Image (cartoon, rainbow, N blue to C red; front, side, top):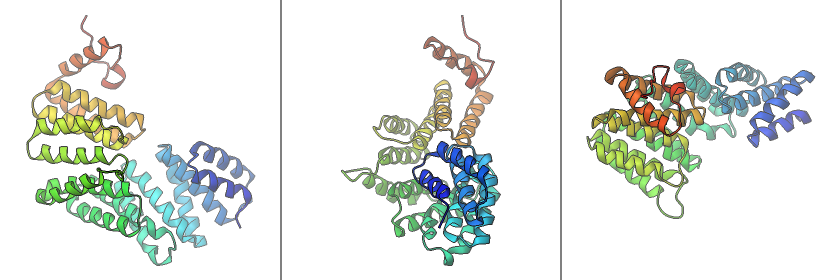
Length: 324
């Protein structure tokens, strides 16, 4: 039986009250005198709360401590959860090798899990993400296919299955575009009817747009992205990708100022959701546009925003010079 304080901490964690988790964990760690089993729970709670608050670097030390304590005390199901959370923290801090090693170690204990085996789809999904960032598209494709299998077998959240389908489509757009249409049809079915998964319409429109873009239909892709951004229910990752794809479409048809504007919108979406790894991607897109087409893009865009009472200097740099 866990101490009452640790049970209360677990309740707050289940309710996703991240700030309260950190406050309570700080208080009970001062008290001390807990067992290694309880310290594993406490450090996992701190790791997960910090990760969801986007305090990713701070989440890693308690996560590593929780990993060691779980192994020492043979808390295998808790260990499975720790490895997933810790691996995501490594991935989102761009430590892709450490992320892959952490995710891979999850499978070392499959025969010991009683509940954590249900996380296998999410682990495969994140392995795929890490492989994509390492440029290993073929291997990532296999990981995303496995993630979809595990999501279906474990009856996990259907939104995760759709997300895995979406990133699998991106992989096929680079390696086997003929494999994409059946997956688009699947996303379309999931986006229709009363049983539609929330946010699935924006995911479907994003996938269609990515397919159109890769086939050179840039204006059609841009139209699909605009429709996706107007969808009544979407989530921030799809909003980010829709804006970034719109930026690519505008660049492809020679509308470079608009391309910079949509890349900026992607960055602002990432900032709003505190997804700093995505913000870095948007900054790269902005830098590429400015370095190729000049800082006049910044001035033109800056003047348009300035007329609307918005200051772009914090986002585009001190070389934003307003025309007077």
